[in-house]
Length: 265
Ligand code: DGL
Image 1 (spheres, protein in one colour):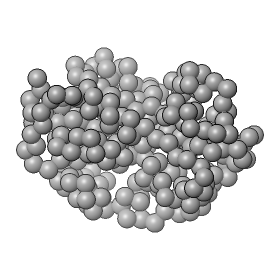
Image 2: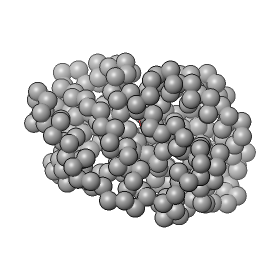
Image 3: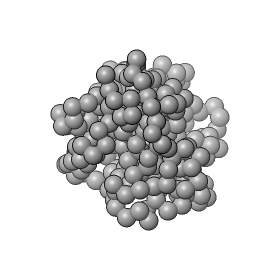
Image 4: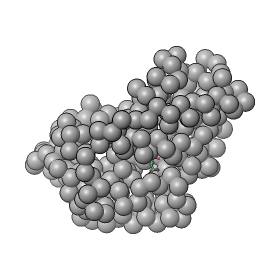
């Protein structure tokens, strides 16, 4: 049985994994959490597979040693679709990944046309090809990279206004693809993007349903930890790689979620 004070480690390149954190609080409100944002490595989406795999496996190995978590969650689609297997080889605890929610989207679509918005690295992964083949056969899955949304979400959590042109560009590029005007379901294949749900709804319209994996991941974590006890020894921790200045402006977003002020890894 795990030490009741042992945390769950949530890992992302930035603040995107907070969407998984929010869902996790709904199902395991008392579980101690350490959230790690690799701000020194942000963004992952424009890096190569080799860079992402080495960075994520190396960091998670060191973080697991330092924080002794009972479970680690890679709350990042880019890192999960590339490095999940490698991280599982490195860590001796359960590791939960985040993969694009193609399966639920395929079950929801009425028109049969699904838009998938992710990072450049995520949308080119074979992992995504496999999900499409296994769960969206007979549907049309239109993929686009939207790296600017990562910066927009990071800015929003720091209190900055989201430029509507950045969101509209995503809508317009999807609409311009063959069959794009039939999209009724949007897979948010990057954990940062649900932070922009309101802005996306304003651009795409309420008739386009947004689907992401956060609640499914939270349920999976709760299932894996079923029967375990949780004792918090203080507020949850938010650690960042690189200079602490990278977390400036996040104070309100962290405090409202019950985190202590950001600290350096
Ligand atoms: N939050 C990450 C994801 O889910 C990506 C952001 C980045 O490019 O670092 O893919």
